[in-house]
Length: 97
Image (tube, rainbow, N blue to C red; front, side):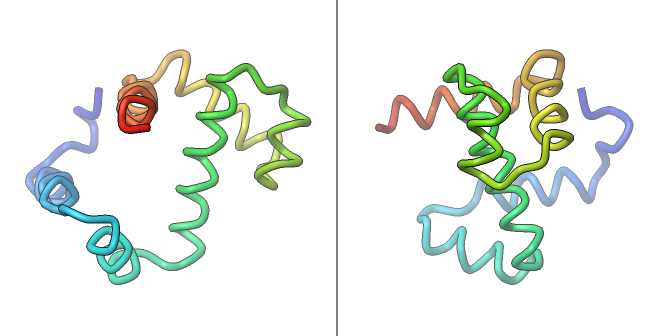
């Protein structure tokens, strides 16, 4: 899990994310806490994870998201061997429609 980087400050960050109630709040918070480039990179990784979980190929994902094969490979590694964060989020997103 996240033992190597988990501490009081990262606990605080995670709690702050959980406190958000609307998409608008999330947009405003992300805009304050990260650069537009960082936000877009996170969004690209999430979409890459979604497409990988649906069976898309690397070339299809690269074309649709603009992600490099290195990014796609990294996301695939975390989908298969990570802490299951992507899986939890993707399942909940499916449930929400």
